[in-house]
Amino acid sequence: MPEHIETTTPEGVDYGWVMQVTFVVTILLGAPAIAVLSLNVGPLPTWTDRAAFALRVGSVVWIVTAISVFLYARQTQGQT
Image (tube, rainbow, N blue to C red; front, side, top):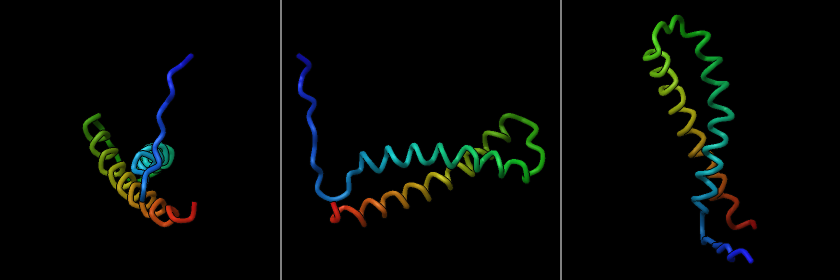
C-alpha cells in the first residue's frame, strides 16, 4: 500500500501554485515572444548576443507573468 501523500490548506496565497503557473505560462508565452521579437531586432551574430537578448526579454515576461499570477491568486483566494 503506498504511503499517504500529505496535503496542505494554505491560508492566503498558495505560493507553490503561483510558482508553478508562473513557470508554465512564462514558457508558453515567453518562447514565442522571444522568437517574434528577435525578428525585428536585427542581426544577433553570436550565441552570446542571442542569449543576452533572450534573457532581457524573458526576464520581462517572467516578472509580468509572476506579478499577474500573484495578483490573480490574491484576488481569488477568498472566492473558493
